[in-house]
Length: 166
Image (cartoon, rainbow, N blue to C red; front, side, top):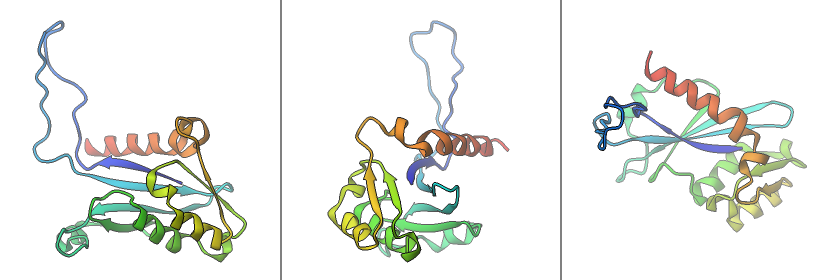
């Protein structure tokens, strides 16, 4: 299981400037660099849990705006959520665990990084109650021990970048 941030607009990777110039002007697309959080979860046997996408919610209502919801075409294998910050926080993590894992996962193991949301006692107790072992990867070793960081997130982000240009 791993989360990754995805920008909703193409951030330019190249500039046009003479070679050796002391100053390089960087032009970015207009507007704020909006992003979402995408969570991929894949079991050891290759079964994929529906992807979770976390948008920033409306400050007043705490929900995703109806304007955005109308524009979304959500496939069956994707779940849409919203938080005030669009980040994966501890209370959202608790909610996501309850909704994603059930009795059929008892005896399983979830490998996660040491994001502060994952290290909360509430999440640990919930996994324990569900009889699922949570393994937290030591800091600095996620690239070595997290296959999603290496095998799933880079191709996913590459696909997203290519889709900006089509």
